[in-house]
Image (cartoon, rainbow, N blue to C red; front, side):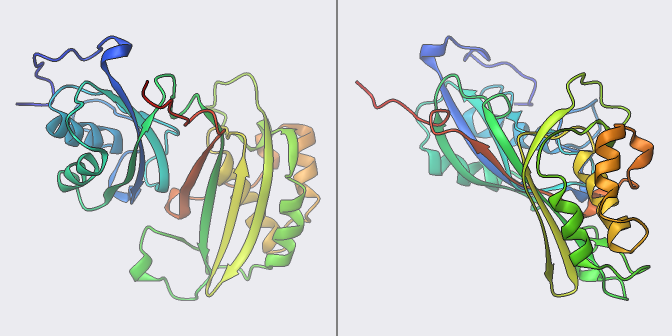
Length: 275
């Protein structure tokens, strides 16, 4: 059976006749053209996950992801969900069987029953991302495409922290978004933005209500300009006020970016007990 072949089971069954299953997925994004399924012949995480699940539940599925990570971006806790009419397979069996059919750089960490209305993206109330910058003088080959190697300038983490604090709160983040982002509403809330030194790496971890296209990578690029002494911490205020992408720093490469986790309210994942 190929992934496109229909079976006797309907792809879109009535709500009462299906399970909604939430997955937490980790992946090394270097080999993929992002999360979202694309044209035939373009390798993506969603495509690989759907192909594996079809072989497990034995009917066509569509996997909904919480975030469409770009090419080269990684995930420690991407959230996804799909509907299935297969009631026979237990959750842990589904997780193990799916992992056995996935490439080694993708793994399903957990599988859980979710309410019928749960949607990995629309039900989310926030996301956390982490960006890893390696400041070692020699490129770390064992972390190739897992960190952004930045040997050109010494970085002052304290200066970066002073700038990161200015991102907290609700602001119009248009100046930190890609010009390709079509969304009219660019107001988002940043709950936390931490800069930590870990060995020869600097980690920028940001938690927010949502993020515009390339927003995290542009935030990091701006913090790096502050960290190397090119701009003061107050540069953040200028970008927020002007809403001009040209006022922010360069877009940091995808290699160092990780989706850490997706946040939901308590009701979003609550499953009613059987009658």
